Image 1 (cartoon, rainbow, N blue to C red):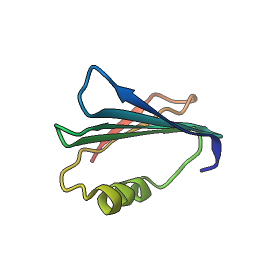
Image 2 (cartoon, one colour):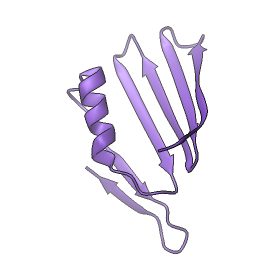
Image 3 (spheres, one colour):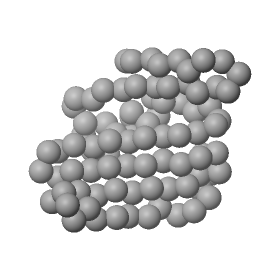
Length: 87
């Protein structure tokens, strides 16, 4: 994925320890949310180009030591109905 605009970070005052990052990529964007007190991480990747979802999961496992996750993939092709895959 090619970065279009460098990542931006926002501190969420209304959530103690809340952080949100967003990076714009050529094909859309990636957002990342983290809540310290809940030990909660959410990664959203939106892309018009295919990518390997397992690479994102591997990153979370290697960098954040994630041991429990839910994964939802939504295929939003414009020429067909949305397809939701729960893993």
